[in-house]
Image (cartoon, rainbow over all chains, first blue to last red):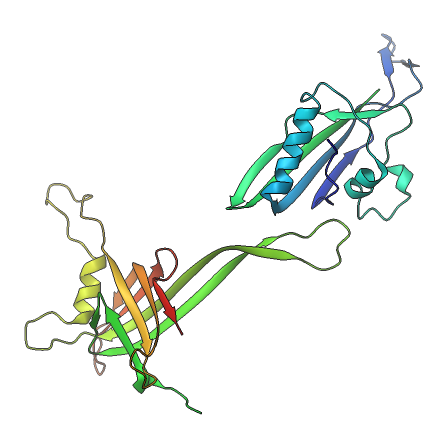
Length: 128
Length: 149
């Protein structure tokens, strides 16, 4: 089952970080060791406001197809174009780096607004 | 071509025509749900819930001395006396009324909107040089019963 190709109403993006370990000596000197070459723990919070219930249901279906937060997945071009819709900067700046996949950080939240209309919030985490 | 003015206005309270109505106002409102997406340049929306509100003013008029008029019907629907003096915070719930706001267009039924109304406020001002009126505000409980406007 595919991720929705709806363009969200709002999006929050965090680029994550590299696996860095920081040590502080007693003198206060800071030493940082890089343990990997890929950033991870990217996070996207997506809100789809006032969408039809059928569209909201598709988020549930995708979540179930991934066994909740268990399975990671790659976004197709169409899915990524939708998720990052409205971004006028370089497209690659918000895309996941090679080797990073997305998984659900938590279950989608579906708020029923009026009959037939819901607002869905989804949080994805980029993992290696 | 026909225009209408106050002479064509009527108000029915619980099925009975009110005798001394000064004004009535009806306002229908629709809440909109924002569906604007990232990348849109203009706001988009869909309909959410609707509400119907209004107000009316009736002269505090007694058809015969000592009998309640239509203003009293509405005032007594909203204002309730306490059940016991020892319990000042306990009184019966206010009553809903059926209001029919009608424009007499010389047809048999006229043009009208009929609603189940919950009264939201009632006020009266007694002043020298003016005729006592009751100003009533109301909100429809659900969609109108009948609409032919």
